Image: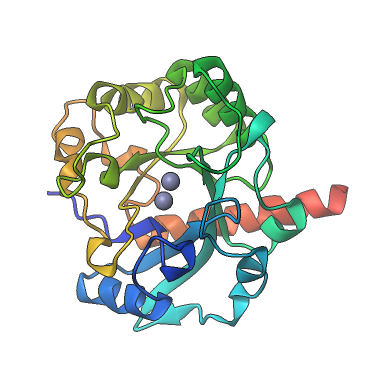
Length: 250
Ligand SMILES: [Zn+2]
Ligand SMILES: [Zn+2]
């Protein structure tokens, strides 16, 4: 059985509706044998979410806690026309930028066309690494179009364990669409990430709700960018290089 020992989507108390500190998240990861986590608190437009200063001061957190590599990131909110709720200067300070569509964040996106167009526009942001929970009942998107844009813009699409968590009284995912992502990833060549979307430290690295994906005949370990710590570190190195070249051209 595949053991994924990294998690690129986790929330701390800073998100306003999550319940562990960075320190507790790192300890939780260590206890579970998870070697690397991205701390990706919600962007400022989330009710109860952190002020943008949270992200500006993130570098004071050590790169490693309890032997766990801590990647300083964000789960920004995708707003109208695909803008994000942190600007380029703020995003430039972070090591990993993800974004997703969330309710109560002030957007006026109303239908599948809007959700698809905003998601694709967000992917054109050079700082964006990953779209979180691209498959959700509440915000349906044209997966084929988004898949193509993911390949063109080198953006990761997420397989979100929390969307199928038995702990939630509803599941927000659509199994057939998440399975379709595997086939689209092979067709277009973008990468997927397997993440918990933990809002408490004991959820880090909990991927069993995605067993239907791991057991699918379309599943291949090679599609998963965070299949190992080494793979994530390689990705981050390439990212740094790409962004430093971008700075030179601006
Ligand atoms: Zn989210
Ligand atoms: Zn999240």
